[in-house]
Image (cartoon, rainbow, N blue to C red; front, side, top):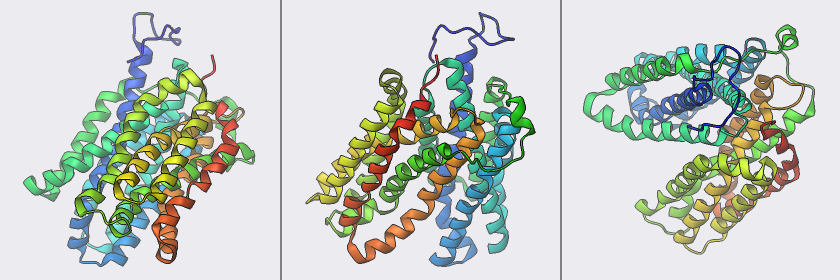
Length: 396
């Protein structure tokens, strides 16, 4: 943990390692949220088999998960503005912990849809709250931590996805869901006393819950949206592109997203130090250009090996684009962090959820090579808006 010489807040003594504990707590919240999301992924085939539904119905059910996230994200942002992120993240984390178990116990399609809506909703609501808390910890520490927080989310997702299949095979579906619940409660119990207590501005507590009229959060939301659409494109279509258009084997085709994910995770752990040194604007611009070159290289690659290298390069670039956007959204002048973050997360995750479906339709008619070559056009918009990343830098 970082030990920067800063004055402790009121109520903390000089002997208490206050700031490192708050950073550990928010990192654990990201890990927990990613773990739940990762644990859901290996359950999908069993979920489909239990309900006896086809791919189209399963697709609609998975869409319900996304709709739940998008509905509860702005609601969470409003409550953060009124109550502060600590209270909201605690409540949403408690409510999220048993939802995978609840989903496992649902007997039919309709009750499963309701459980999926709640699961997606509280994953999204907690996402807004933990990002808002991370912004407050950044302010308290006077240094960037958002990229490493997102790295912990990726790590949690990796642990959840990797362990889920093995646990279901060895112990069964229900014991796995019970384990996920107990793991989440244990992580939350450990982090609980260390979560940074923040307080809303007195005027924010009296305001009505409404979307901001200031254009700035929507512009930052565009940065998040156009950073996450390419990420979703690689996730959903990278393997198919390598297999169908570049002749990669089944084993090799999985390396595209694996390389992308690996470089993204590594760079997220390093990203805070990079941003502290170069600032949000310069880091965002370099990251965006790197991602642009990587995806264009992947789209124009004559073979799978070069395309995988392009995806790895894109992962290096994309890794810190969203954390910078979220830090900027939570630090905008004259706006409560929860409101700005709810706009950025809503726009960003809607791109992850819905854009890949549209891209799949386009690719049916054009091919994925053209898609991966043209999607980086979105990065030009990010570059044009990159000066707004100045709000991501902690104020000294």
